[in-house]
Image 1 (cartoon, rainbow, N blue to C red):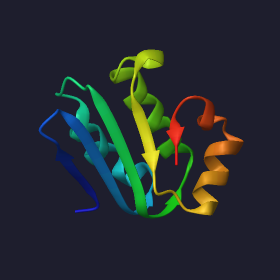
Image 2 (cartoon, rainbow, N blue to C red; image 1 turned 30 degrees about the horizontal axis):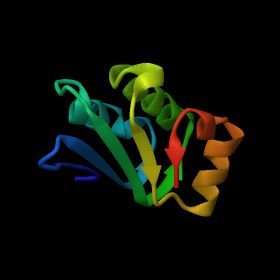
Image 3 (cartoon, one colour; image 1 turned 90 degrees about the horizontal axis):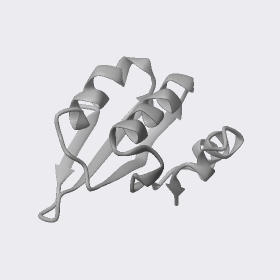
Length: 98
């Protein structure tokens, strides 16, 4: 599967994306969080090879579900190209990106 999840003992959800992060992953991505009460979320893009505008929309939907401005969401292990896309889209102001 190309969208993997792990929940730590303290309730932190980690979502790992493998391959292209695009509309084809929309349903699988939503299913990782939609029925959970989220304390903190980590989106691991270590194995993501591509990110498009639908992926940006999915991240925004996750942020809304997790509490909007009060949410605790980190995007980690993004490649240089993905980090550029996130910065151009001003997502570095909405998420903690490392």
